[in-house]
Amino acid sequence: MRAAGHEVSLEPPGRCDRDTLLVIWNRYGGMHETARKVEAGGGTVIVAENGYLGRGGTQPKFDVHPGGPQPHHYYSVALGWHNGRGRWVYGGPERFAALGVKLKDWRTAGEHVLVCPNRSFGVGEQVMPTDWADRTAARLGKSTMRRIVIRRHPGNDSPKRPLAADLANAWAVVIWSSGAGVHALIDGIPVFCEAPYWILKGAAAHGPIDAPVLPDAMTRQAHFEYMAWAQWTLKEIESGEPFRYLLRAPLQEKIA
Image (cartoon, rainbow, N blue to C red; front, side, top):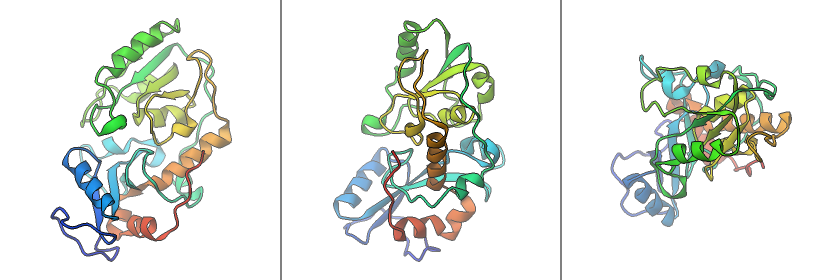
């Protein structure tokens, strides 16, 4: 923030006005209440979290294990919220292209449906119900003959079983708002999202689980290109670039 030209205090803001800028990690507990106070006073809130997609298709949250954060690791940065609920600025297709990720054609076969819950914390409607995975698996079992597999969230540590192993031969993936859906969409696997917000919700499937209605290739590509502007490398963050970009550039409306 200093690199972006701001005075910095590590203490919670007292009186909030239009000049108040709060930067927080996620938005839950006391930080959510502080964010609401800042917004009520006319200030601005920037929310950071784990990134969505690393170079070559890696998972940013687990890129940091075991060596710790490195300059090329990605973190999400957006105004107000994160994971699709916040606001950010789209600057063109080049940022996604730089990740070196190619989207595969939509998959037309598969034996199982993979259910991927995330952890149940946050605020309001964004929070996943604690029993969501089991209820979802039971509901899906009544509407398809395919096997239902639940992939439990690995927590903060790198998963013992690679996500790619569970995506192999999957017909579809059902998420609340898990980052696993990002990688499923890269592989061309239909993703059904049940949260009100998700970073790639516009590229998700609709309709019956056995006959998903899918966006066309251009729409899916466009949502990935838009997503790429909602995350920045640690090196970029240290330079102040994302803060200058978010706070000075006119915000473009989200793509449909």
